[in-house]
Image (cartoon, rainbow, N blue to C red; front, side):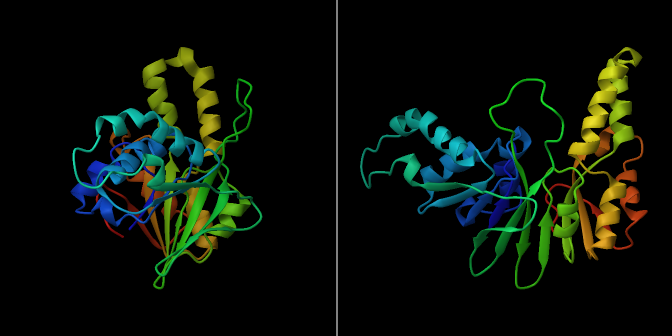
Amino acid sequence: MYLFDAGNGVQRQLKKAGLSEAKIKGVFLTHHHLDHNADLGPLLMTHWTFYPGTLQVFGPEGTKHLADHIALANSVTMLAGYPTGGVVKPDISETYEASDIAVNYEAETLVYEDSNIRVTAIKADHYQSKPSQSLEVMPVALSYKIKTAERTIVYTGDTGPSEALERFVSDADLLVTEIVNLQGIETQLTKFMGENGKKVIDGIVKGMAVNHITGDYIGKIASEGKVRSVVLTHFVPSPEAVSHPEEFATSVMKNFKGNVSVAKDLQEF
């Protein structure tokens, strides 16, 4: 089993799906927003507590730093779990291997390969808004392509529009993609902030337009790339918060004639 992103609640959802964490061979993070990496800590600690072997963790720059400091912070957890008999447990840092993936826009980078899958990645255009404070380095996001003997799956993670993404999705059997509804975002923000917040709202919507992708764009690249099926996930705003949630799918269908699914928890594709 291979896990792509590890947001809050992933362990609960694995349990509901009847999937054992013991079978996880690799964790692949797209970027370091909390909704994508919040449960890396629990995954690492559960593996250390219950399962043998080394858990592989892959992600953009900062992934090794994150994993190593989770392990360091949990030295107190390791101490509290001192053995009273049997085999002495290894140090937490010895039970995982975390790797930062160096990628660019020009070519796919091989991330991982075994007898079941081949995983490549490209840099995703998720951080296009100019920061309002000085940063030592800009964060990086990834999109992944997973090839098996039966099919090719592309997982966009969070990304803005880009020519690299358009090439990357080409001939995918399954495109698993985020989606934003810019009008829905504006409507939801206006409910909370009112017309007095228009300038702030306009800035947020503008940022969402370059850091994420809309249904129209998804349909366009899926059609041009001869994608077989599209699965929509990571909705902004959430389908429950908009008047017409079916518009997430219909916005894609304007440009794409293949199968489009609006993902729900625990579905399989």
